[in-house]
Length: 320
Image (cartoon, rainbow, N blue to C red; front, side, top):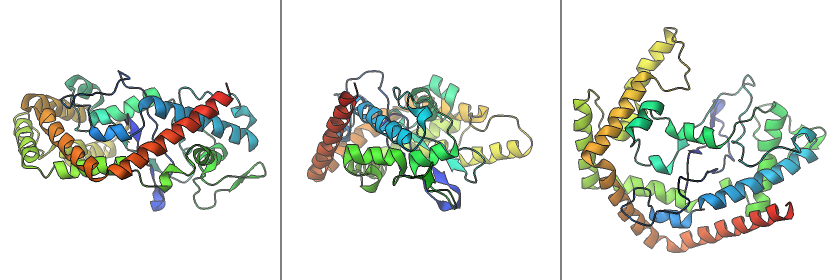
């Protein structure tokens, strides 16, 4: 299950950062929901790593990466704390690259649902959750390059006289655990989860749920055809851009008052119209169909995850 997972950052000059991985933290309950009526239940999750397994792999990954960094001459990182797992490294500001990160969470698969949470975080609860679970560390440019191997323009490919491994020390660690870099292979679970939403949104009952939600939002003063439109908020983005151009002192990383109001209305309308119950039932049906058609591929993915978890456990045991 993915919880507050950052998607791949996008760099200026159309250069994509690879290797972000899929860090995750434990949910409120470690048990996977078994009832199809639970909005957290997703058939495809049975083929994904559990939260505890993701934590094990993450700790092993950073343990190996830390050893690699010391080998490359970063002795100060010998005692780097890897539990909790650090956030994916950010390139230092002012080094010629602009980074953006998108965040996703299984708990927000159908958008905001809790009016109280929405009133606090707007549409940024996934980001806030990720930042709580994964401490962000400030890295020097040399450390960042050595960890990630994400080079731009004339970035040095060596540090302290040592060649940086392909995809950096984190990539080297991934290869030791998985046998390859996860970003070099297609993740069928992620692909089919996306496909399930695409198929589900074409079902008449899902479209009817969107219309009922939209009518509720109009009564609250917001005109959006679907929750996705509200979350993107093109009209809201224009207004917030104008505010910044006019000298607004609001931190751009924090949700605006308008975003919070919109998200709160969004969540209330989902509750009033039974939106999540309707679309979740359709999503489960779509996922069951996709599982039936792709079972061999999914079973291979499950075995790949199990092998990685086993390797990660052995790495951690060797260092205990």
